Length: 265
Length: 265
Image 1: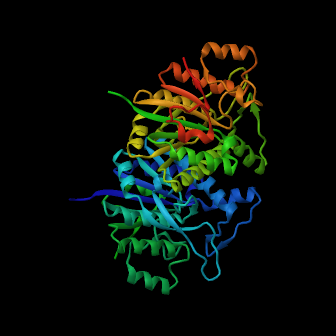
Image 2: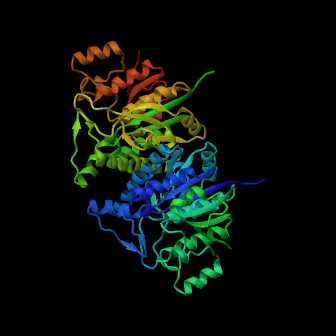
Image 3: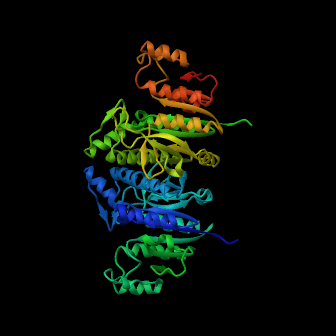
């Protein structure tokens, strides 16, 4: 039997923290037809709240050290503020959104990251299981799940989990039931070899060209974990992975759509 | 056809902000068999966060003035911190909890309270509609919905909504499908005529005896809105309303259970 299509869209914190960009993204996302779900970030807003509360932010290679106080901050900002604002906004656009963390319906469980090379990331989790049944049921009711980047360990602890990783984990798990199109939406048209030159957009990238671009220094820091996640997803059954500008989500069905980078095997 | 039983339990912020009491309540709640859902408060924790952020708390007759900054605070504390901690804790106890605000699946819409007698409560909402269909579907999947005291106006705004009111609103709406038992759980055994005397517990209260107790000054401030909500619920089809100690939720099915106040018509 042919699998039904499902779009999994990841949107980053930089778009969300700007009210105009957020509205433009959500308007575009609401237009996308068929089964869809959203995964959001929000790291900068968590840092802002932490600073207002007088907490120190500690990052290692772009990853937050999530101590006892910071897990509460990210639970408030990701699970509360951003998630519920997005859900209320989507409802106003006629999109029947429902917010989730991994703890809700135990939809994503994680393993707390152990101390490696002397680094203790604290309450950070790497995904272990996905409740495909529940997500499928929610989609059947025409709901649009909106995932905050939080999971749980099944023993009562919430865990901070990278949003790109949540998106690829969901994409891989849901490929058992759906023809999954995974889309990383952000501020640029796609992967650019020169961030100052919009016409340096790479239309297609595969593992061989990726290695070459990395060696030439044409793919930069922030894009590397995103592309690594993308290639992992493709290798594990996800039908398609794209990196797309946040205003173009509504036109993903268009055949002649050129404003994105397509990741292939 | 006989309606299936459904327990709607409201738990107040005072129990939740004490880690031991919270754990005792959740252990008791997890033991309760059959369809159930939880509604939680959390006002004191919101005030704590607001103060850490340097915001001024303004209350009128126990109700919070929810300005632009405070709606974000309650969204973080109710929708994020408390809701997700409760969900993760219940999951660890084998109860398949799923957290909701009124915006999620548009499960409760509200009307923003208009300015009355010169008082502008800000982003506060009075419930208008309940998505009975979705709640029924979630219960059918053996999920336990956990409601934060937040609703939405359908136009993109979250609204702060009293948790007792959410509990009675859900109880009334769900009575169309279920044999609803509404339970207000708190720190005492039930309604006491003398808060210092546990043996002053009122086992049954009806509108006539309630008026008498109010006239005698034996029912105090905090209990009055709770009882008003309770009588409204009974009058509108809810099968039973009880006010119960938070540790006794798991034994609600016991016939000889005496530690509560039963509200009757």
